[in-house]
Length: 381
Image (cartoon, rainbow, N blue to C red; front, top):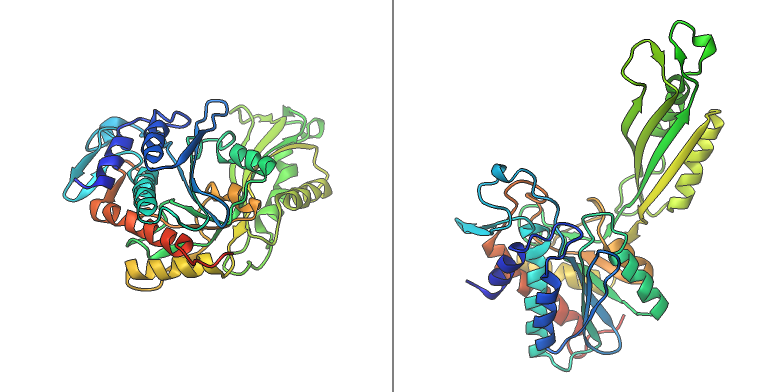
């Protein structure tokens, strides 16, 4: 077996369901320390974070990943145990194979090779890992970014190893992500008998026009390579199951995926203004998962486009689609961020997998990016 396959298998074999790292970062830190990296373990609450650096000064290039995985679901639905990785017909199966222990293993191997080949490289190359990407993302990279901000830690470029490819390795380059804003809305009414509506106040009837206006609103026309901002109602609940009782409260969940036209605070204010204009008696709780980010044309995108074209045989699609990633916490530090990783078709699914041939090429992909950015004579940002 290859070096990267060996390490991926060892990582997948550790059941690191969020926020349990299950010793993945200790294993990685030991390897990187042997390669000359300085490693700092940054534990916050139940979450492990690893910050490993080599070199000094700028530019600073960070490889960003996570060691936690989502729960496997019913184990008897898997063809093999999700935490006992298996290679079958040239494919590696196991929870985290694609999202994203394969990329983490490739990061480590690429970094070991890079510092061995370029011990006096320009600037700083770093690896940042967390065990809190798949969960609430409170004590992971979000908290580490706060520490970095206090320290004045510079980050110029960030490459996230999330599984971004669609059909073949390197066919997509993610150059930004939409922001995500979630709301829990409670519209208060007055419970009563359906036969006496004059003695009650139905929150469902009161809220429907406002919800219709929220969901049908055209928030913007898009931004650069971003689609228009979208609001989706995800859950509506009222009443106690009886068909003769007017409910006293309506509970609604909705989410906005928004482009750089907006900041979360402005969207919150717009939504609350609309709800108030409809005369609703309501309470709303907001959760800001992250602001949008976008990496403009520059050395990072140019370099990634060139490297990925070599791997895919053609220029990659450059996209801002998908959900969220931890890059949303690094971008506000002033970093340009991209995402490059394996095919994402099986992530979070039963029998998650990655092609061994893709996994074995990943270290060369990441090594190519790091070399072009930090080898002697690389242009500073």
